Image (cartoon, rainbow over the protein chains, first blue to last red):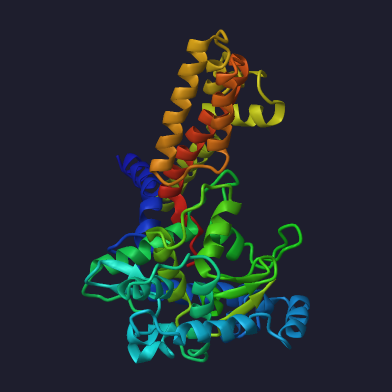
Length: 288
Length: 141
C-alpha cells in the first residue's frame, strides 16, 4: 500500500511541476509582478554582460559592444538628428490655424515630459503614447493628424524628448485599475511570444540574441531601448519613431506587421518602457 | 528500499517514459525535415508518407472546381490566422498568386499555391496556440 502511495506521489509531482512553475513566476493577472520582472531583467543583463553598469543600457548595443561603440562615438561628434531637432522645435512652436500650439495640449507646456510616456489612461481605459497625444492635440485643434512613422511626428517627438534629457523614466501601473496591469501583461506576452514564419519573438533577438550577429547586425539589449527614441537610423537615412521600428521588427519575423500605434504595440511600449524605469531619457538617438 | 528512493524512482520512471515516447507528429516532422515530401516511414507498425494534408488535397484532379475549393479553403484558413493576430507575411501573396493561376486556368499551379498558403495559415494558428501556452518559458527569472 505504501509503495502505491509513493508511486502516486511521484506521479503527482511530475504532473504538477509545470503548473507550479507557472504559479510562481507571474504570468497571470493574479501573479504578475512588474517590479520583479524589471529586476530579473537587469540581473539577466548583468550576468550576460558583466561589468556594464545598468545606466549604460540607454546606449543600446553601444553599451555592450566596444567596436560598435567606437564607430558610434565618432558618429556622435556630429549627431545626424540635429537638423531634425531644429525642425522639431520649429514645428512644436508654430501655432495651429486657431492660434494655439502643442504647448497648450500638454502638461508643463510639453517641455520635459517624455519620461512620463507611455502611461495608463484610466478614463479611456488604454495606454497612451507621446506620438498618439501629439496627433490628438492636432485633431483637437482642427489640424490633420500626422503619419505615425517618420517626418514631422518623429521630429516633434524628438524635440520633446530632447527637452526631457536626463529625466528618469518612472512609468506607473496604477494599482486601482487592473486593466493597467493587464495591459502590461499583454505587452510582456507580446515581447516573449514567438511569431511569424521565422518563429521569432522580440526576446529571441533582444534578450538571448543581444550582441549575437544576425548576418552583419548586432541586436541591442531590450533594456533601455525606448529611452533613446525617436532615432535617426542610418539604414533609414532619416529619423523615425519607436513604432516604426516595432513594425519593422515584426515584419522581419515574417509576420504581417501590426500598424504603428495599434493597441498591441502601445501595450508593448508600456511593458518595455516599464522595464527601463530608473534609466534616463536620452532621445533622440542615432543608430545603425 | 527507502520511501524517498521509491518516490524518486517513480518520478524518474514516469518522466523518462514521457520523454521517450515520440508522437506521430514528431516522427513525421523528423522524416519530413530529413527527406522532404513523399518519403515513406513507419509509425507503430503502419506505413505513412511525409505529405502535409494540404499537399494531399493538391493531388486531386486539377479541375476548376477543385482549384476553386482549395483556394477558398486556404483563404478561410488565412483569415483564421489573421483573426488571432498571427498571419505570416507571405501567405497573402501566395494566395494572390494562386488566384491569378486560377484565373489563367492553370489549375495545378493554383492548387499547389493554395496548398502552400493553407499550410502556412495552419502553422500560424498552431504557432499562436503554442505561444499562448509557452511564452512564459522565455522570461528571465
